[in-house]
Image 1: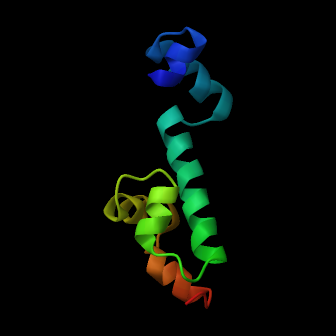
Image 2: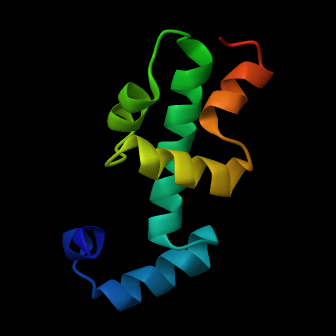
Length: 87
């Protein structure tokens, strides 16, 4: 809704145009961007906690990050870290 307001469109029109152009809804796009940020943080900083990665990436909680990460990548963030010897 905020993005639609910024460009002066209704939320419905914005969602339709965005989805047609980008190929996914604005909400999914934002979640994906947040997940990519969290994934990079987990890869690049062995000392970062999931809570810190979640907060830095815009997730409301570690649980929210974990559910989204598992849904998108099919693996728990800690398992991801371990599978790439990032522990």
